[in-house]
Length: 128
Ligand code: HEC
Image (cartoon, rainbow, N blue to C red; front, side, top):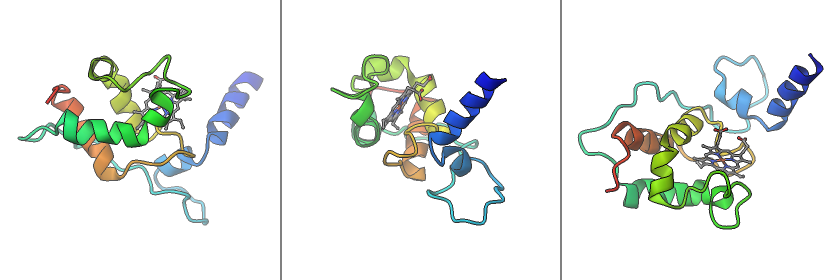
């Protein structure tokens, strides 16, 4: 019980993420960041987003700080190479679309950026 509680508290301590992602919050104070967009209807578009010109720059801007060279999470989740992103795509897309990543204290992708990554994964993550 204590352990569960500690987990719950640390999840909250991770920031406004829970608040930002949950819908219908009763808080009267304004959210610290935009609510997590609902991407449940995202599918692969007729023209898949490009890894090189669309997806990789988003990862570079939003993720490399921790998941790139000298980042805190580079050893377990290095997102700088296509092959690794391809292998981790299921994890990457679930983290991005549920707004668990990036952490709330890091710069947040726009809804359009989250959508682009989601679409690209829905298109089977081409190296295009
Ligand atoms: C400020 C640092 C930071 C940034 C920026 C960041 N991450 Fe993370 N990420 C972490 C840390 C720390 C962990 C390990 C602990 C955890 O899971 O919360 C992690 C874990 C992950 C995991 C593994 C989660 C799991 O448990 O399966 C994935 C996938 C991931 N991040 C993807 C991303 C993506 C994609 C981005 C960019 C959109 C991103 N992260 C941005 C710090 C960061």
